[in-house]
Image 1 (cartoon, rainbow, N blue to C red):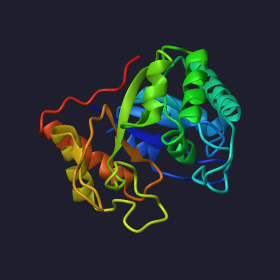
Image 2 (cartoon, rainbow, N blue to C red):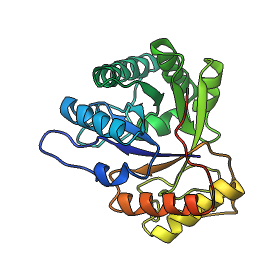
Image 3 (spheres, rainbow, N blue to C red):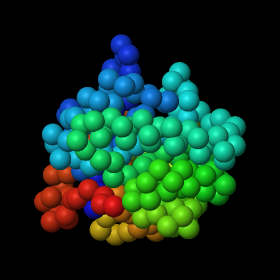
Image 4 (spheres, rainbow, N blue to C red):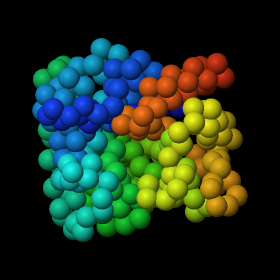
Length: 250
């Protein structure tokens, strides 16, 4: 099982997340590429830190919305989605190459991720962008979503993702952040959700029965207040259960 974290989301004078405290416990880093968060210096520092911790590097392209942190839906065409993703992968790819590293995966961020999880045309455009930049990259998407189907159709290796710090609805979708109890803030609850996903291939939902899912990677949000605590507790419990934790591979 891969344990990934969204990070590199500081920019300019603004510091977001505790990346240096999370990196010792995760196996993959989804690094912001400057649209929803991040900037060239932050990208360089985050890539360098990931390399030092032997953490796989992935691009985390989002919508061009710094004030909204890329979490507000925008009306974009598939062509616009394609261009945004190519541009952002290319930026992080150059930063990684300059550091003597290489990208392993691509995971869309925030609203772009959620939009593509419900819109096959957007998902197809994102998958095509990834394939044309580098067909060896792994495309990460929500378990059971059109993103995974689009990636497979494009000939990409895909990784189904579940979340340690987000609650689920009965249909297997994430509870919108605008609704109560969308975020899991208790460490024990986050650990238990991860164990349910990894060992039992299911997740509890807030409005119905358990939902079955199979995941290849578990996500933590690096901007979450409890990110470092969650990362440490989850990794320690997975290790204690004898569950191998390893990065995604192309």
